[in-house]
Image (tube, rainbow, N blue to C red; front, side, top):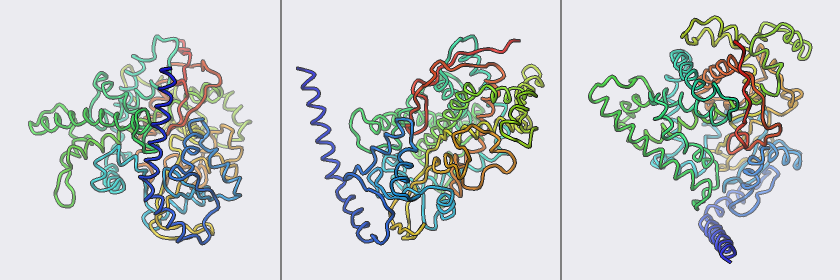
Length: 511
């Protein structure tokens, strides 16, 4: 009987909340309807779905079932068009597919389109509501290049390697089995804390690492703040993280005022504390906390997803693993026959060669990273097949025509990595794992877009490359491994992750 009443209460709550949401957002729907009515000349084909919800559930659920590309490919096939209309996250949206669409969007940033984030982002990052998430992003993109350009990142390589060595000593060595995804997150979050906050103490890092999972899952979600929803969990987690960050900020301000040499004054936090805007105003502590929160999410979630899938694919493809490890001649010849590669020297993985060249205690350096060309090709092929970034939204700032269809001002546009990454016109035999696609000049422009493109290309691309290669070096020089779950399900929420975290059996190299 109690279960009966509990179920009834849940159903009643859902009914009331959805009804309330529908009434609350009727103004938004009316606005969308008026935009549609005013611009019905030659809109793309498609279906706007249910009131308010649109096709959001289908969009989100295909990802959570492990096939985010299905939402797009099914509709491209249904409408026989690489452009279609829908409604996602309560917004009228045009989904555009292919390299031509990518080029158009990336080339018309702040001309015809501008960055757009769902309302959930503004609510999870409340300081952005004082201006807008778009303005906050512009500020960050002006600030970050000085910290994330290659010459600045060179000084981080030894630090990343030191953290990686400590990470493997504590989390991997002397263990028969490990679960890769949480360990990858631990490593990338540790690195991000050091780079952005100069925090390296593992206990301090672990103190506020766990809530980040909930924040990432709720960023792209239906913004209904009810207990148990992804959005609700994200708000609670962000508040918890923000509290810890505000404490760190307060302590850093005290240390800077006292000229204490306990922190690296060159990190991003210290720069934010002294930076001023055009009016000479400093950022508030809440501004800084939200910006650091965003950096920590972007600086570790995407990297940990990429690392996890690198480990996954290397376990499934032993010939690729061996090429990364030591570039055995017979394996190179095998790959030459398999892929018809003309650049055999790039097939030398060099990881074991690099490891053997190091003196005891000597850390990786920039020259070592530059030798890891084949390893990076492997990482790129992994990100082609399992991109951490599934796609991104834009907003039309003017009426315009693309591919023969009208795009009304105010509508949102969504581009997807999968529309090119798994397109045989862009990548022949797209399901085949082939790192040699990235030799020479690599894929055609606007086809390989795991970091976006144009003015809004991820400023942390080089940071991610270093972080991933340092991890690959450290795991490959220590172990081979075998997956424990042959057909583990993949969930995309919002980044791809193995449902069970990718448990593997470790096989240490013989001394």
